[in-house]
Image 1 (cartoon, rainbow, N blue to C red):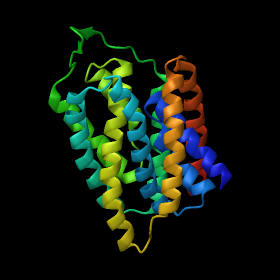
Image 2 (image 1 turned 90 degrees about the horizontal axis):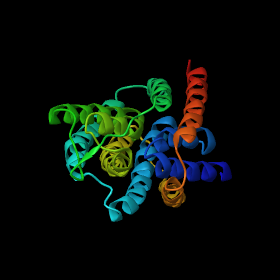
Image 3 (image 1 turned 30 degrees about the vertical axis):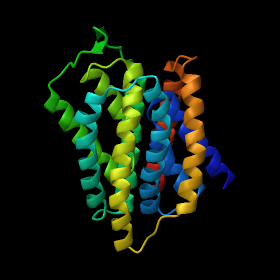
Image 4 (image 1 turned 90 degrees about the vertical axis):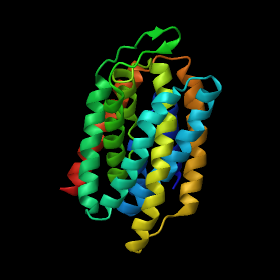
Length: 253
């Protein structure tokens, strides 16, 4: 179990540094290091990532690095989408969920390899680059993916906030963390019903300890992020995602 706690620390560091990536680590850690059932791990991942993301969001909120308009446009549809995704998860196999999860990991790696340019601020506020309804639709779709495979979707939310919402990277990360927390809690709430119907149950002790360790890692990652460039870290993390995604596909095909 020590390896699982180390994994929890890395989940928090990833969220604190990049505003994403934590949930993509959480599911494999819970399955392969903590020995959890696949569907239980996906559900627990949502609760854990929600708690860690909210802890990581607090320092950004105190520094006023949160764009509340984007939280409404992206986060609220995302919560609805996550709830729907959790319902759909009750009708698909765990193998399908893990294969979809592996595909998501590889897509995330590709997106992390791509360079993202920061958007300029106009009169101290980010200019919304695209129509509001596009942001709403993206939030809904990312939410459905969150509910299906247990990922917070930060690797999709951050680029969407930058490219569609016109936010600078620093503002997008803080905003992403709150959106991830809202979506994850919405999906976790519904997953409790889904698991109950399958006669499966959440390991609350594991969820609480994992969340506390991850939250500490998130706060550490937040402080470190102010002092280093994240580009090399993103690319190294992308390589890890490709390897882990390949491993999951190998284990489930």
